[in-house]
Length: 125
Image (cartoon, rainbow, N blue to C red; front, side):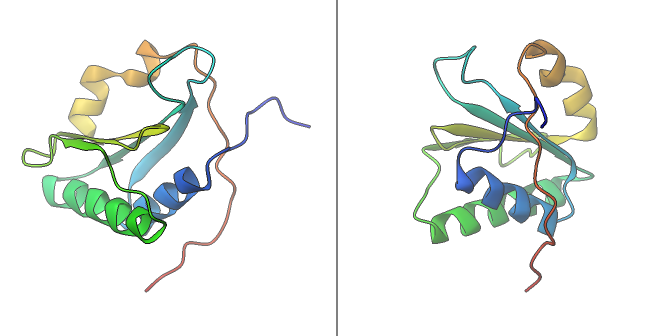
């Protein structure tokens, strides 16, 4: 039995799989339920360039829309150094590798436990 929290929202898992399908790097989920009032989880990932970050964002938006969930806000899509997608119960952060290191949300939210992402094959289209 692990002390690692499990994903509560299936939409987060869908967002993870969408990001993986676009080769997102270093996916992490932080559980903020006991330390934040504005959201339950952060999904963090990185891309290697602007176009990849936008493709990750587009795929997450597409997959979650198929589940009936649309982001209430998307910030930073044009520059794509840090794209923030707010889905209410969780927020997706898609970073360039440089921006991820600079803003270092993992350190800023260091008290938030990481959530294990179940190992499942990624569906390819």
